[in-house]
Each structure stands twice: as C-alpha cells, then as structure tokens.
Image 1 (cartoon, rainbow, N blue to C red):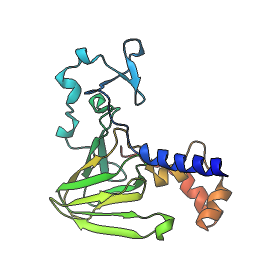
Image 2 (cartoon, rainbow, N blue to C red; image 1 turned 120 degrees about the vertical axis):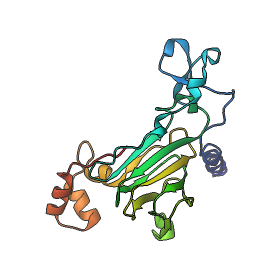
Image 3 (cartoon, helix red, strand yellow; image 1 turned 30 degrees about the vertical axis):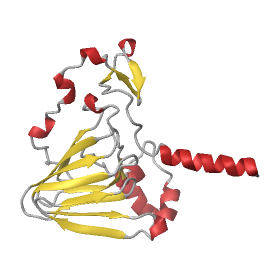
Length: 222
C-alpha cells in the first residue's frame, strides 16, 4: 500500500510538471522535415541552428483576410508549428479569425492549450462551457474592438459575429501545437461513423435525427 500510494503521488506530481509544452534547452529549434540533418525535439526535427535565417521566425499569412464564403461564414488561419516552424519548442501559437456578418467559429476544444482572444474589428458573442465537475456552466460575453477574453485549456468554446459587418480577431495559444477538436465534426462526421445507437442514447433523440446529422457534410473552417 505504501508503494502504491507513493507511485500515485509521483504520478500526480509528474502530470502537473508536464502539463504544458516543455521548456526549451536551447535558443530555438526551427522545425524541419529532413530527418537526415536534424535532431528530434517536441515531435519535430530541428534545423541546424547555424543554418537558421530570419524568415524562419516570420509568418506573413495574417496579412490577408481569410475566405469566409462557406457554410460557417468564418475562416481561421493558424500559425501553429506545422505552419510556422520557428515556433517549435517555444510553447506559443497564434491564429487569425475572420467572420462574415453572423459568421460562426463553431464549438470546439484545444486539448493542449489555453486561448486568449482579442477583437480588432466588429462585435463577437463568445463563450465557453465548464466541465461536468462545475455543472457545465456557460460563461458568455459580447466583445467589441479592443476587448480580450480567455478560454481555459480543454473547454468547449465558440465565437459568433453578431454584427452586420465583418469581424476580425486574433487568438494567442499557450502551446506550439494546441490541437483542435470541432465538436460537431468529431461526433457526427468521424471516420468511420460512430454507431448511431451510441449517439441516439447519448443525445436522447431518435435514430432518424442521428442518421440525418451523420449524413451532413461537416465543414472545417481551418
């Protein structure tokens, strides 16, 4: 029992110690796909630091608005480590969010990162839902230009443009690769599909509705 208790305590301590991206042990580690000339760090191969250039630390895709002509009326342009290799080992990421009038960034989760959102244009209705432990409480706020809102790591959250004009926001995330799980896409559009009996019982609706939802083409705005 003493051994088991010690093991559990150590496991709990370790989970807290490694709950976020590990601290870098060098100035930087620009991600590269060439495994023959690199060392693996944080799931990415490192470019020889002597070959690094300024462009490795620059990202220019936020210059242009995202295409919001889609079923959701929104477009998220991500600067995660896969798009911005210079972020590797630095523990941060960004995204630009563009919204058409009444456009939606649908309920989703970032399993590995907290998100801080700042509105630079327009009016957004945003919110997140707490875990079961806190009774699935909904927190919402209407944000206008210059306002900031934070979405805790791993909680379902969303952003909706409630204005009649376009809206733009920028998100800052506490991981180089925060991950993304869009709720509807994952539950009703998984490959392969979740057994309809599971979803019928989980959502307490009839089978026809589940079949209808699974037949939809769930759009990904990233």
